[in-house]
Image (cartoon, rainbow, N blue to C red; front, side, top):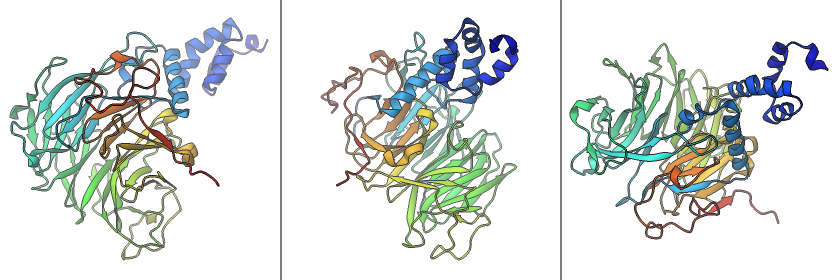
Amino acid sequence: MVADTLPSDIWIAILQYLSVEDLAHLCQTSRYFHSLVNEYGWKAYLRANPRHSWSTSKALQQWSPHDQIRYHTITDHNWSLPSFVGRPLASKWAGKLQPVLAINHSRLFVAAANHIYSYIFGRSAEPGAAPSIQFECAYTTNKVLQATRDITSIRCVPDGGYDRTVYVGYADGSLERVVLPACKLGTEGPIHIEPSFREKRPYHGAEAVESISSCGDQLLSLSSNGTAVFFSNSANPSPQFIELRSRSWATHLSHRHAVLGASSLTPLTVHAIHESHISSAPSHILTNSTHDDHPRASAVYGICGTPPSAPWGGSEQVIISGWYDGVVNVHDLRSSRRAHRIPGVTSYPAGGALYPVMSMCDPWLFEPVYSVSSGGGGSCHIAAGTARHSVVAFWDVRAANKGWSVHGPGNDSSPVYSVILENSRLFGATQSRPFVLDFGPGVCEETYPKLTKPPREDGLKRKDSSGVGFYCTRYGHSRPQY
């Protein structure tokens, strides 16, 4: 037998190139390979195929490599169907709000009006059971409800593992570094955040802070009038300013690039970062594919990058954006597809003006895209929160023409203002409530917070076939062929 003649080191090296199916079949051939795969094979596969996940990362670290891969494999299968459990994370809020989401490895934060709702990630009782998410407490940033003090952006930053530090932007232009005080699980009534837990960053005057992005210890904030500020999460930030001079909406920050979304003829620009310094002039203009033929201004409302295990290789050169005209574009800064002329633009950056390498849309819903995120099964999916009917659109980049969309639980007549997509879960927020779509196995009633109102009173339809989630209307993007 060949296994007796080759050293174990060679077999271990071979294992890292095998798929899940190959490892499972090899595991059944003999006791020798069963032991080898369990000791080395599953671990090698996890290292070669990391999964981007915030809410399940701590729980999965307690599982064996085999149990982790089993969870990921079932999740990938559910994405291919698609099959998921849809649940609101809370009952309806009073009024119509514009919430935003932030996440770290311990908590999901939902900021709405002057409140920050904290949901803590738990651990599963046993391998294979879905890690839980429970309501921790609510905070308030202002004792009096004022529209000018509404939270317009929020972002988590590293704080040594406490996972309680966020940057918060407001409608009146205020920007604060906030350390959320500790609280007991399920604390009733909001906790007011005292001034001793807040540090002001007076960068934006009286203009609303539309977006905050972070990468490591660096941050990028953007106000509605186009003032972008690049600064560090330190006692002496030394901010750098860029003036876009146009209505601005979105940011994305990586180690090498700062990406800014605005309303203009060139609504998506990239600024290079060198040794913690941001270039004031853009290095690239990222265009829509229609610029040459139909010159018109547009807007970019949402921007994100790709997870580490994405099909593109998790490169920072790949940028995903959601546009006013309902299109989601994927740009690759390494692409040679360059626009030769953009009407109304007289000067071009060194990197030129790039066409997207991929464009997607929901053909049944001609509405702006407010937010985008990437991840999902195989780290191959893009999610887009749209401007009406609580619709989230999904595309698998391996077959982008087979996209599908789903209405959030309750089918609120609202935009999906914010989305966060990870391996097995999508978190979203409408004007009425936050919600989750869970594609992982082992979801039960105890996985998510209990609702404080009866489902019918909350506008929720009958439960789905799982008995845990609520009915969500889903439809495909393919048009019928006649």
